[in-house]
Length: 345
Image (cartoon, rainbow, N blue to C red; front, side, top):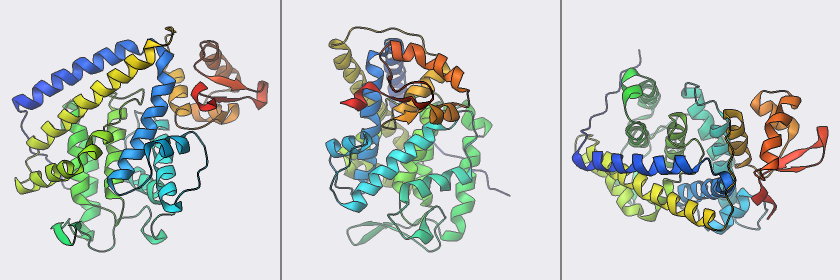
């Protein structure tokens, strides 16, 4: 039987204030989403930022322009492992965003994400599986945290995943769930290598699944990376306070507010020099833009398969997007391929 996980925290006045401000900023951003002139560009910027900052936290040396180039399908003569880590992260985000938000996320999905993140960068025996020996978190040569032993990792991880789908978690605000998941998984440290990337990828999935970042324009990892010492200190602080997550919730909420403000400014800059193109997107058209935001291009057949629609229905979905300039089409009929306009630059 899987032990039930019960996170411990209080909704402090500081956290509630930030939650309210985050709701106001998110509401503003949602209102702008009818004006889609900026969506394609900011989605491409966001996926590059997520891949850059999440891998950089763990020491990847690539710059944001280099990561952005890789996200656009360009090939660079750079360190092979660093390049592979970034490409893996981009592939992981694409895989997450193509999943139905209604799907229950399970153990196999988590290990699948780890496999995508670490393929070709760590020993193959450690890819997509739980750790087989003890690991630790170091600061220099000093051990600052010893996670649970290998035999406990699957049990504790299953407990966390069960909590995500529990009635309690369903009632909680999405930012509480995302923050709890982040701290709990990184503390379990269930795999040999890549625990941080795995944790932040799962957090991105929570924000997507619970409808907080349906357009994928939210790069919270940038906040964590900008002041890494504080990020690590906040994680460790909870462990020193008997796993009371209150201060961690306040910290994550601060990051969400700062990230939403940056997103707001980017939207304002992008809109300033572009005429408004207003179009009401249905769910499948939103999925098309999300999917193309993660790849350089996709054939009509691949897109129809991803959406589970016929080619004729795909054409009907694509026509208004192409006419509005949101999607660029190359070729005709069965040989057509699609990409976001910015991918051609």
